[in-house]
Every structure is written in structure tokens, then in C-alpha cells.
Length: 172
Image (tube, rainbow, N blue to C red):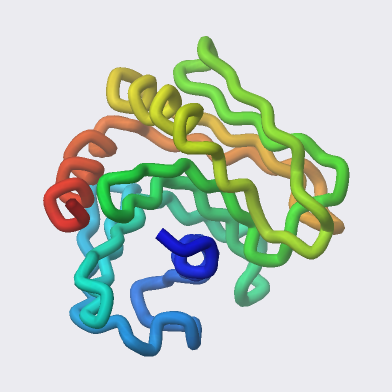
């Protein structure tokens, strides 16, 4: 798959809110959204390239400001799953993004440059995280949004296996 296509898919994960919001997706059609407890599954079919991608994510408003949102989840395209953590108004430069499942298994990632809005976890590491999430009860993500105090997103994994199953069925 082309790097530009992967970057477009990542931007889609970062911006998706149940509607098409990026010019990169003008060729997308057949948007579908499903809710599984706190988890949302949003899928898009790309007709010209004959694939569907799905995002399984948890969304948390960080303030009353529009767009001040953090999202955590898994993006799935062509059988590949990647964990992503985003703050739509950006992450603080030099901060750490910490993810843990049941407060036992923990992963730490460097926040990207101040112009980026999130972290896209490498595929091999994503598989380990997803495997733990499928067996876990709670996932906790700690981020420091740009210009803000540290925030903690804590979400139940009770309905995550069902949500991921739907994404896997839709985005093979």
C-alpha cells in the first residue's frame, strides 16, 4: 500500500466523527457506524481501490470547546490493525503517551512533533496491545494535550471484543 494512502487513512482516523470530513476521502462511499457501549465502529468503503477500512474508537471531550477531543482506538485496513491515540488540538511537545491494560501491561510512546495530533503505534506493537485489550477489563490512556494539563482516558473493554469483531468482518 502506498505511504500516501496510509497517511490518508491515519488522517481519517484522527478526524472521523461519523461523517466524511477530509478531502482525502472524497472517493469514499457507504459510510457505516455502529455503537458497542462506549466504543464506536466507523467504516468506510473506498470504491476505486476496492477496500474498506474501519476504526474502533473511544471518544472523550476534553472541554466544551468544539474539536477539543481525544480519541483512542484501533484502525483496520486490508487486514492490518494499528492502535492510534489522538488529541485533535494536538499533543504537548516532548510529552509521553502512556497506555495500560488493567494497570498491569504498560506501553509508553513519545509524543510526536507539536504539529502532529497523535501517535500511530507500529503494527507489531499494536498486535500486542490489541491482544491484551481483548483479554482485559479496562484500558487507560494518559496524554498531555497541547497547552493543557495531563488527561486520563479510562474505558471499559467489556464491549471491545464485539466492536473489533464487527470491524474485522467489515474490513477484511
